[in-house]
Length: 287
Image (tube, rainbow, N blue to C red; front, side, top):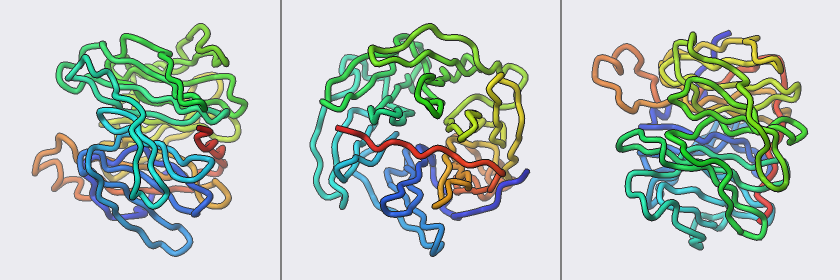
């Protein structure tokens, strides 16, 4: 299967894509471009909103507005993106780490993890922001958090520390995480695990950084589908559209030289495909 071009946006580093049924728009962030993007599948219109800092992950709130994980901390923003409330700084004692990948769980809590973008050392973490705005740490010793997503019934959290080249599956509980198991071993894949989402059958769709594809893993961790892209750096994916049957895929131009971009000029654009299975709607942040 091959994805088609949806928006020729050529982001520096597109990421964090999601579908918001309240406005029927696909939203994603250009982290290093410091911008928030949207796309309306019905009208094929799209737009860009400048931001003051690097936005890494985000989610709509059930009461309106957004929860925003910027590189240096988490904030609540109004729906029109004109008002913001700072909640907390992320790892203020470590100047080398920043927030990276996140998604809400089925109860509407926001789970987001960090990365060390200076040395790549495993000294960051994954945290959970609860509905009462309390914060707890779920995983320590993380080099680059990615692939956070949840099974349709919410009992499993999938997660990848990208340099490990595998996706883990955790028993997901009210009080935190249970034991982890290796869900998908990716040492034979051409790319590294980046952002993921789950379909209604429980399959995990993973965007492969430097792999030029999105791969679906069945419940047994074996590959069932491959979606190819005309660019190498897939970053994240999410099901959207009114029927949740279109897979939207963000990509990146980060760390690409002139020759790389000549070979893949659409790098950083948004792609889409209808792979024959529907997704699961994300739960808005409950806080």
